[in-house]
Length: 187
Image (tube, rainbow, N blue to C red):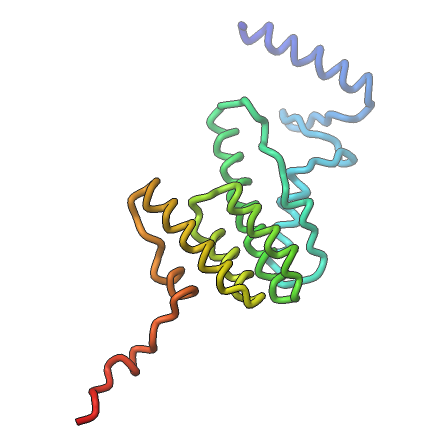
């Protein structure tokens, strides 16, 4: 629609919103913003994530906040795609960090839940699989860790034609220290 008509629609919408909820929209210096009393899930999520990364391993872990829904589903504007990906990456890092923190505290069931949520979101993400394997190993469930590694290896090979990193393989199949492998056999 023409710009003058779009601006008219915006003014009408602003009037209706502020009539229904006085002070909901604040206009200042040519910008529109939501009033401070409005809670925005994305803003809260980013603030929680920021606090968590500034104070890793701290208390106050809330897994439901890590289950953030997709930002503006169905929108394909460049800025939305960028923000959606940024939030997705932040969420994945949060899930992996939560899994590590919970595992260190002995909360294996919740740690595994967080790690599996990361895997569900991004099945080809090695760091998510590492979190799952790490929880299994911390619990002493070597068979589960091995099963997860083999499942991931098969998926990577089938989907991308690559192998997991040596670091991931070393979690499940620890190699001998280099000094032991280079010793000469006794004569």
